[in-house]
Every structure is written in structure tokens, then in C-alpha cells.
Image (tube, rainbow, N blue to C red; front, side):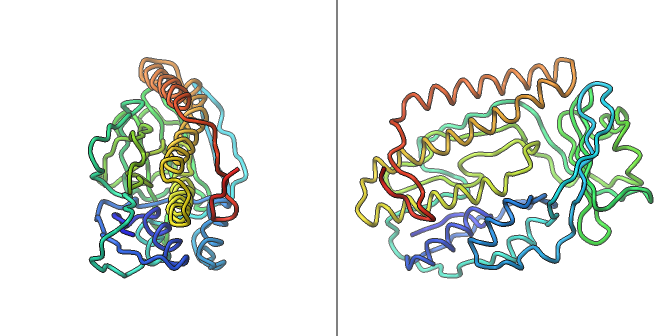
Length: 326
């Protein structure tokens, strides 16, 4: 098997296939790393179980409170939270990498990085741009908390990182403009650094998601709105399903049926993500930016529903890490 990519999805696929005794060849595809990931309890448990390493996240800085001001003139609301913060580089180092890069002829290729085989089209639902900035927290800011705030021109997310680091995510308007509008987050920041990265943050899905001898996985398959906070968990679940599809074909299950199942499951998961995101963009604020992004999400939900009508009913289910016909 050939795996192209070196992110979370690629490493999980490589780990699962190698554990099943399947020779794996890995082709890395370097890309900019996310400086801070917030990983909740369910994603932590999934990854620890998958790799058989219960201690994997034990030494990482915790996030115990989430403080939210969402909606025009909304008062801040403090909620209990249970997550850890880790840079993508650190997480990948912890997961490790299957080092077999033999030049064998692959029966299957897992594309966990672009480019994908042609013809593949990309469907993006929204035009929002995100920017990450290193910041230093004010003396009164609680390091075991994270903050999220909706504003007239977008939204902000602030999180402490390892040691004394902290990161600001600005979605929509320019960070300076959003901070000028902020009542909750601006006072938690002592100083802002230069923008570290800019990227499209609207949900994205490719079509098709799989074909003869290949599957797309991770960010090569889809991208999630950072407002959901579970992009890492989604990537792991995609990897589990991709590895299960490949193993089922090697057992003799029909590839066409499995490819259809894979596409249907990922499309259904992407639709659930859009349904989850829509209330945030409906309620975040008034104004043209929020209305436009909410309409784009609604169009994405409609598009997914149309795609799902083209797929047959699910004929497989995951039994542990294996796909079984039902």
C-alpha cells in the first residue's frame, strides 16, 4: 500500500495497515503545520486506543474552561471543558511514522495529501479566510481556559499553548479590525505577533472521494470549519474507515461496493458537520458577512443531501476496526 502524506490521517492509516500485516510505503508531503490543536477527550481516547498508548497526552497543557461570547451583545458564558493543547508537529512526533518507503507496486494508494488523481473536483461552502497569530497573554488571562467571541466582521478564538506561548485565530476580517471590535478577547492579550499563516477556513469536500485503487483521506478529502473543534478526531475516523475499506477488498469484498460505502459515509459525516456549524453562523451576528457564510453552509447541506440520494443504502458497518457486510 502507498500512503501519500504525513499528517494525522496518513500516520493513522499507516499504523493500522502495518498492524494488519500489510506492507506500507509512505511518501511524505511537507506542508505548513498548525501551531496549536485543541484535542477533546473523545479524540484523545480514540487516538490512545488506536495506538495502544494511554499516556500519549498526559503531559500536555490542559484546557478546563471555555469562555464564550457568541451573538450580538452576548454576555460571556463560562463552561467546563476538558481538552489538551498540542502543536501539530508535537502530535505527529508522538504518533511516529512508519518508515518503510520501499518502491513496491501498490495495489491501493491512500491520498492524505494533494494532488489527487484526475478528474477530482473541489466543493467549498463559504469564502471565509482565517489567520493565526502568536500572542502573549495578559497577566490576568487564565492559561487553562480558551476564549471564543463572535464580532460584526467575523470571530476570534484565543488559546494558550505550551510553555508561555499562546495563539489567536481570527476568522473573517483582519485580526486588527476584529480585535478593535472585541470586548472579551482583546483584554486577554498583552501583545500580538506577526501573522503566522493565512488559509481558507470554509468547509471543503472533494468529489469523488475514492476510485479504482485509491481513496482520499484527511485534508486531501475534506476540510472542516475550525469552529467545530474536532478536525483531528475527524481525520482519525476517516483513516480508520479508509484502512478498513482496503482490508475488506483484500479479503475479497467487492471494491465498487466498498468505494460507494466510503464515499457515502464521508459525505454523511461532512453533512453532519455543516448542520453542526450552521447555527453558529445563523446566530453569531447580523450583517452581510454572517448572512453570506450562513447561506453558503445551507447550500452545502443541500448539495450533500443531493449526493447522498445517489448512493445506495449502507451495506457495511464497522465491527471494531473491520468492515463487515450487513
